[in-house]
Image (cartoon, rainbow, N blue to C red):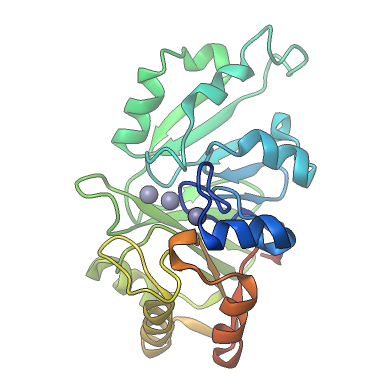
Amino acid sequence: MTFTILGTAAAEGWPALFCPCAACEEARKRGGKDIRRRTAYQLGDRIHIDLGPDTYAQMLEFGLRYDRLEHLLITHSHEDHLCPAELGYRRRGFAVALPEDAMMTIYGNEQVEARIRAAGLELEECKAQFQRTRPFEPIDLGEGVTATPILADHAGEEEAVNYVLEREGRTLLQGNDTGWWPEESWEFLAGQTLDIAITECTYGPKPGGKHHLGVHEVLEVRDQLAKLGALASDCRIVTTHFSHNGGWLHEQLCEFFEPEGIEVGYDGMKLIL
Ligand SMILES: [Zn+2]
Ligand SMILES: [Zn+2]
Ligand SMILES: [Zn+2]
């Protein structure tokens, strides 16, 4: 099943909306892998992760069919990961031929639910229902796919999560907006054999803060996962969630990561789960 990375930028995109910094100007000039949209992923036709401000543009760019979605997993309520208003376009009058019995389940924490409710949407009218996630409790997504939310250290009091997806014995870790995972999450990961580990790299060459990582912390995450025996021998480690504040363009990130056997993510990158 194809897992597509639909966006690899931090909150403001890269080039950032209103930013003329050197890294943004260079990205505008180079285009291609240096154009980074806000975070989202899609697994097959039915499963999508996060619904940020680039949701519509990603549908066009990557030929997606959101009318076929059955499961929408939200990592946390930050605005680069959740734009509740977009859900309103599933209502009658906007999605005129969406089948009467279509139903999309949205998964998320308390704050995700609160932001969706605050948008004033009747989920029933959107042919959607909400299911609260509980850290480390697996969610059955049908067709042999499960998603288990693990706790991130990212959004203060909010229970921000990352998802571990499994299908037919293969395992993928979706790790943007992680911070340094709390102990329970490392313990959970110690029991996994990851075939694909996506890890965030918001700050590029600059030191990571409390809620995001930079290139050096990516290496620490890789080493910690290896120490815990959580990586399959041919595990692909892929970086994402880059901010222009880091300054390194795709090429420079590749120069740093290639000798480490780590791949630099880009919008439209396809992986197999
Ligand atoms: Zn983010
Ligand atoms: Zn900039
Ligand atoms: Zn965030």
